Length: 334
Image 1 (tube, rainbow, N blue to C red):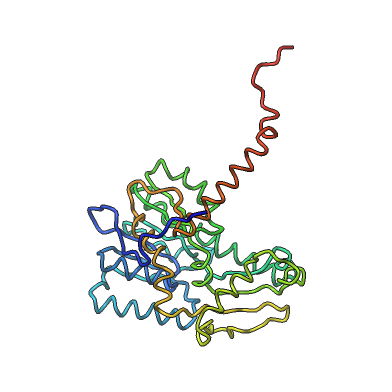
Image 2: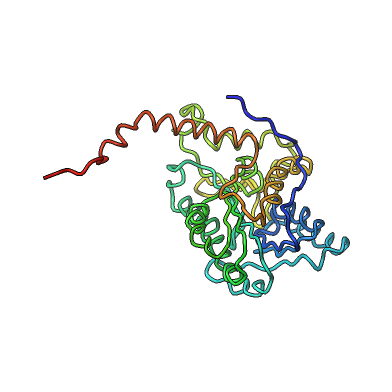
């Protein structure tokens, strides 16, 4: 298959027409995507409310502090506010932000703990109580967290009859698809941004479930995510493959074999290239009058989706007779 070539390796920000500054609520304020997005939006004149749960490692906390310092120096300080996100059990500390004319939400992260990419097969993640807890924690942070944030800001959007919710593809996208129909009558738009795998993995903390022999490369030739992640990490500079969390070592192994891989420490140049396509999509679509319901980020991802749609179409044709076997074309007379 011939894949379309990207227009630019480092696309610049592009903004939809708007008569006044856009106001964003961005979750996971200390994440690479959030900080890079803020540095793109603030010089453009937009207003940002960034949520922080205070559970990031020291490196990310320092990057957020640097953003706040630069905002003061550059004169952006009055357009940047960091608020604390509380646990999934309550969102009372988010209530003050409802006074802001919020027009967009980046639901990339969540309102609870720092985002973690859990690497493992279904069987591996069911091996012990500890690995099963990893999955429950994923739903708490990746599903209930974004849902709680959206619930907190929807009343403001409904009153203004205007808003746009952007969710970076994750577990929460299944809720987002049904939410889009619920909020459409209030002139609130919903967009799911599907980023590439590298962006998802290399901007989050990595935790590996203990491997089963049946899923090792020697026994299972399938391109499993564990092998893909190791391949990505092997390309990073040896001295910066992962950063050390303030709470635990990046190479710590638990009693049940779980390994906390830490945050991949990307060189600034690599991070800029990695996030360029996602940032371009966010700035170009956020607050758009007629945004897409789903947007595929990156020419490689577009090619993969087209290939997937082709496969689905071929399978549909192969079994179309089975699909239509019980259709009733004419009324059956007794």
